[in-house]
Amino acid sequence: DIQMTQSPSVLSASVGDRVTLNCKASQNINKYLNWYQQKLGEAPKLLIYNTNNLQTGIPSRFSGSGSGTDYTLTISSLQPEDVATYFCFQHNSWPLTFGSGTKLEIK
Amino acid sequence: EVQLVESGGGLVQPGRSMKLSCAASGFTFSNYGMAWVRQAPTKGLEWVATISYDGSSTYYRDSVKGRFTISRDNAKSTLYLQMNSLRSEDTATYYCTREGRRGFDYWGQGVMVTVSS
Image (cartoon, rainbow over all chains, first blue to last red; front, top):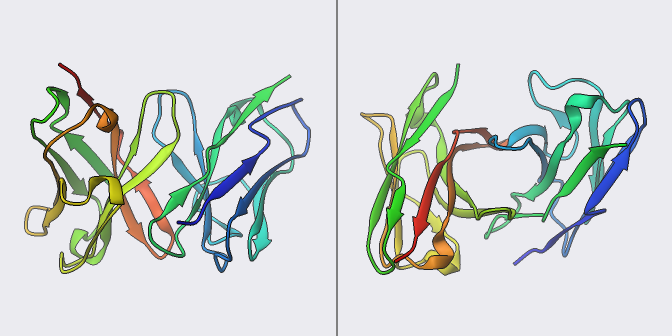
């Protein structure tokens, strides 16, 4: 199974900050990497698919990059509504696997 | 607008069965693979099972193989998850998701399954 390791597990930043969330796969996942945002009590929402493609309706302050085993989600200017847990997810091979999440807080 | 609405959850005793349903609307159901993803209380997300657009192929995580069955009725635009021999570790919110080239792109609101005596 491909293990997905996210860092940090908790991130505290100020409104307006540029924030970077990391995800490392245990083997090459060929850019089949998605990012999901989950707010408290809600279902996950797709933000970025296949490494760097912004899902319809998602603000342009979200962006993704990476290749091979290392991937990044960047929020260019943190907003209060971005408080959530962010999960990375690989759909390159079975079983499909998620990272354990990064909880993003506002300072 | 894509909508996925799960139903059928609740409290069930260990070893018993439960069947979840997911009613889909707002897209051509028969064109998409579908999946179930679960989340134990205060835990992360865990893929459970996937079914191809026509139902001809299914995939399961090891821990549910032989106990869970994913199926679909394209005429009714409905996805199912039959869960047998339930264990306490199956306690979770179960999400129905649409699966395509973008991975899981739309999610239902989730349904809670609690396995306890």
